[in-house]
Every structure is written in C-alpha cells, then in structure tokens.
Length: 229
Image (cartoon, rainbow, N blue to C red; front, top):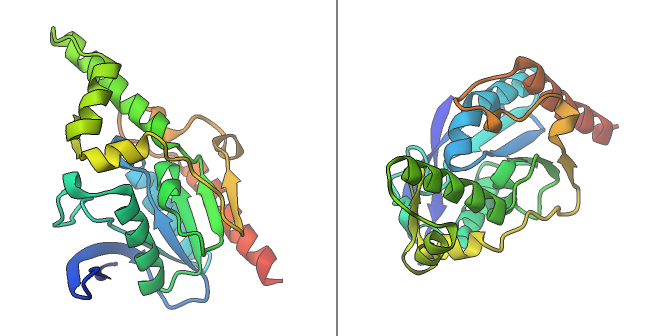
C-alpha cells in the first residue's frame, strides 16, 4: 500500500507530506527500510520491494518512506543535507512505529541509532561519491569534455554538483566526503557474500534476483524469530 507521513518542521509546523510504500498490517515486528541512494536506488528498487513482499509473507511489516527530495517528494533534492536526512529517518521510525531498521547500501548512513536491525552491503559516503564522479568523468570524456575528479570535487564542495542527473547540494556533498556507516547497538552487517552472487547495483540496468531477495528476507525473519525466543 502507499500512504503518506509528515515530518515536523523545526519551528513546530508540519512539513510537506512524504510517501511511504508499506506492508502494514499492524504486526509486532515493523521494519523501517532505508533504501540505496541515487542511481543505486533505481537499480535496487525492485529488489527492495521484493524483499518487503517476502517479509510480509513471513508475518513482518515493512515500511519504505521517501526521504525529503527523493522519489515523489515535493522537496528540492539540492537543498537536502545528510543531517536532515538523518533527522527524517529518525522521524519516520518514530512516526511509523518501527521496531527495527533495514538499511541498504548508503541508507546505512542515516540508520537511526536507537533501532536494532541490519545494514545490507553498507556503503560509505566517499565510495558513493567516487563512483558517481567517475561515471560523470567517463561520460564527459566520451562527449569530448575534459573533467577531473579533483576539479569536480572542488566544485561540489563550493556550489554542489549534478551527478548522474542528481543535484547534490554543497552541504550534502561535503558531508558525504567523510560519512561512514556505523553500527549501533543491536545492529549487524549483512555482507553481499552472504546472499551469493554479485550485488545488483553492479549491473548496467535495473534488475532483480529472486534468490538474493529470498536470502535477505530469510536472514531478517530468522533473526527476529531468534530474538523472540
């Protein structure tokens, strides 16, 4: 199902409504899903929802909210900050009554510290930026334009940068240069090797892998069953 949630603005007013894709049946276990970002979000979108379908079949609610500036959000992406996304993720966890968090790739950078859960193939901010900047320099070279990673990074820090069609503001860019995922109490890593095969973000086009979705959902369901004993 698709519904909306609101983030309370700092002045106490209600900010724009953001969308949530959720399998919400009011069950005891409620997993907040924080997806991959930017181009990886496109490549992993189907996989992410398929994992949620499997969690639903296992009797587990899952909730995938838009962060401000993403997907159907009315907020401008270029004005978003990493700190703001962390606040939004925390607000989503509270507003949606999440009991656990599943953070996918760079989503681990904003995983609420107060929730137990899992980081799947967590990605750091520097690695995220390097991959996107490299893709831009390759595209520019093919178009006869000379750009360097160092030059683009300097522009990003000062004025923001468009990478793969995503307008990343300067505050976000500078924060990502140093952002590292950190496991909080009750959170654990799930490496790609645990699922088998290469990560779907490495493929040229968006794709799916039923076996990987099965495995990730099974790990979460098994962990929850163990903690309930």
